[in-house]
Length: 286
Length: 321
Image (cartoon, rainbow over all chains, first blue to last red):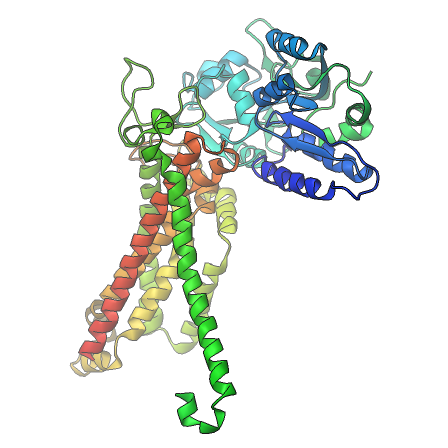
């Protein structure tokens, strides 16, 4: 479901050049370009929003650049961007810096939700896994299904390539930044992982929500005592599902003018539909 | 020449000739220049590994080639783990993986392709030859991503069901897929080598009372040997640089082992998978270009050696004929 992220930075760059080219004087109505900077995970989403929005609002220019959540937050502190997109919440110390520099509070706007599903073969007897067990499997400390409630036999874990945002999310949230074991096989794209898992009863994989034949999404438990939770729109939105996170927009002070118009549109039905198309979950609509 | 043969064409014809000659010469040199430029570009991006202290702090040559211990006090190991708090850039697992897959592919492809070439050139009736030859040549036209996909979806499944190896995607699976890409090259070059053996050799052999098989195996095959070697070398060069098939079918785990049914990660697949999103001018970026330069030099040398064998064959046969 999640679109391959490798190619998007290039497309984003091209789109940016094109936007810079078209947005010059002479396009009639003049708008100051809105800049969005930050998370590489969100580049693809922000770019899709920007493209669609610009198509619907001629003369409106949005420039999207990646570089990572940290880069975006630094740019917000230095006043180098209108919107910072971040796949992690901003720290209090960072918020204080913005306040000190610009005299305004940081506005935190959750714009989408991201959830990573764990797949096993449909015949696998494993009913649930804890995040600690997942960590053990992917760091190579747990190598046999017997140790996590399955039948005897070696676990064959599949991972995404290390250029993928999902890889980074998994590494940060499940492995607590430890290294993946060397034996972990990596495949290009969620579809390849799903296919590989569907063919091998001993395998396990992760990726965006998928509805393929032959695999099953395993419910995840936060720790030994908590209830297993399966990934769904509801559990991701409520935060019950352990492998989920919010994706944020940050602005200095309450957004106004063009920036506000764009953010409101992104949070509206059209923007949230795009967010589902890209492979994320929409945020709760109140 | 032309003006001398056709005096009436002097003037405009001579001018057109010169323009055409210059155009052809330019395009020939463009090929050489672009080759040089590609090498300069790759080399320039790989160079900071040798010159920049900042890059060397993370990825020096000794870190690339010698075993490293991940933390002080732990055993040394070869690890490729570029996205990490302490990035590890050992090239050994990748080098071993590349060689493993390539050698498997060549070992499968060469006997099949050479035997097929010997059959079509020495034994097959014309209509069989006219059917088999284009079919094998069409194989060369199949995009490697299609072979890779076939390998991932079909071949891997068959092998896994039949042998039940731990890893469904492994060096052998990828090697079999890769051999499909190598067979047409080895076949075409070998077939050319057999055809280049003068007819007089065969006639002489048969006249001495040798059977067709004796002629083929003891006269034609030895005479064409340099060409067969060239075919092997060119096939090796094709296999070592092939990307999509191994990216899809090898599992891409950078494991250093002897087992042919372990997963492997090759140079080309590593570049394809990681270059897209690497931070520009980071040590990781320069290491990937270093891999590229390494691969480039390897395939270049291998192809050069292949051409040398082909030339030697031609000289030998011309001299003998």
